[in-house]
Amino acid sequence: MALKITHDCINCDVCEPECPNEAISQGIEIYQIDPQLCTECVGHFDRPQCVAVCPVDCIPLDPEHAETQEQLLQKYRRLTTLTR
Ligand code: SF4
Ligand code: SF4
Image (cartoon, rainbow, N blue to C red; front, side):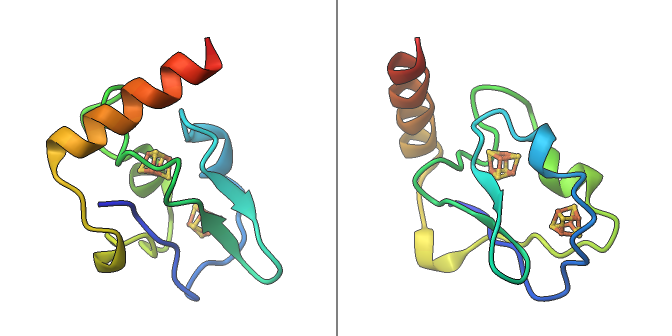
């Protein structure tokens, strides 16, 4: 399941450089996560790095993008193959 950034985001900029998949970018008002790129950090780290650094705890799971652990791993493999 990809994660999403809620409107509690204070645009502090700390999550963007932590994402191993470059899934986080500045949106019109707040930061946003591209669900096509977010793997919950599966394949890179044992927990979501954006959640670990966010000072206001505004990055929940996005139920609209439900994925199994295996699907996240497949996404990770696809992304790392593409960027190689
Ligand atoms: S969970 Fe990981 S891959 Fe997804 S947006 Fe956060 S840092 Fe990036
Ligand atoms: S770390 Fe949290 S508050 Fe800061 S930009 Fe990212 S989502 Fe927004």
